[in-house]
Image 1 (spheres, protein in one colour):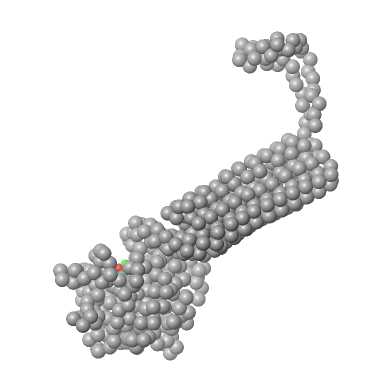
Image 2 (cartoon, rainbow, N blue to C red):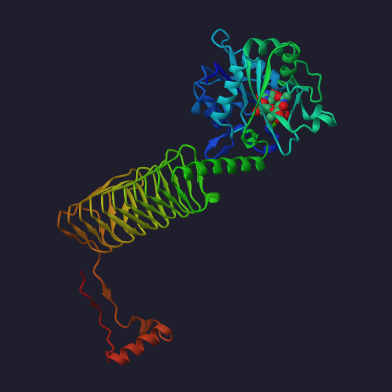
Length: 488
Ligand code: UD1
Ligand code: CA
């Protein structure tokens, strides 16, 4: 099913959010409220989309330009009501190419394309002037109530603030989502008044006017009333996020993903997971992240725009714009930044940060290292506490490390520098010249032991006493001469 045009109402202040950010820009699972609404509406392939903006409109327009550049925006300077907002929007719709329009609010992120499709189907098959999406709520307070006659036909919508006691008893509410025949809508928008409790032009009055004019008005009742939840305050923002999380997790589990704790697993709609992925507790997966089969993610891992290969294991890790190869072993406490590419069977271990670096198949960075702007070959081992010194304070340079290299612990690789295939570096070296293939690069000072320094300079301490005991046991003579120890 498709509609010709979509109008999204997003001019309201969102006062109850108590926020400097316009309400529709608040996020649920990494996407703005209005972004979720537009994503669902776009699946109906409308020819035109108009968003009515008002409060915080610079920010809202900037955001819309970024996420949905084809949408037109219309400014409503004063929020004179939903009917007024739709009338302004209609001026931007090309009525020559459109007969029906879908109207929704920018603060209902849980609406699905399936529900909108069903609404449009009902509208088309009933040849209706207006089709309204309704829901039966356990607690309908605050919403407009759907009034029906004794035959069950919709006769109008009455706002909470205008309702008498009998109408307040009605549990069926107006979701604020409608499909209108454009001719009927235009006709009745012209006749709206502000003669109501809020002194606003109510879009809902179009329904009563259409019924009075003898036009067909039908309601489509939402299967799941949670879909129409509007976000007006931070509590509802959290509720909406939880509903969306549960919905997404249920879909993944139905498709063969194991989740040890779905309540602490937050997966954006844009993420793809293969069957037989295992998600441990406390994970967040955002953006264009994709996980191949057999991978185990978590616990406590946040991946954004990251690709994880089959059978990889990623624990207690934060990664953005990284590619983690098949069967790679990552974590715990690992930070993979943009441009990290870990090969198959590679390892990035505890307290390791990697940025803009290719780590070849089977290579390992097991402990306490920074790898920035580097290319590392296959089957190479980077010793603990190695730093790729990539920045001289002005510009960044790259380091190239070959295949089957052994970088000794605590090596500084001062870029630009190349360590050839099969080379070694000695622990504690500051490598600032290339190391040829097969060579051992040693770049550190010789060790000097100042004998008996502690006995002379720290006498009376526990260290001096321990040294004294050791010397007595081994029969070492006091000496005031320095010596050096053979290294390598
Ligand atoms: C509206 C409906 C109510 C329905 C409820 C569902 C009317 C009169 N009432 O009430 O029947 O149960 O939605 O959530 O329509 N907006 C503008 N310009 C305005 C006024 C509102 O753009 O001048 C936008 C708001 O930003 C919001 C949407 O329209 O996105 C709905 O407005 P809101 O004031 O929240 O309407 P409700 O009182 O909730
Ligand atoms: Ca509302």
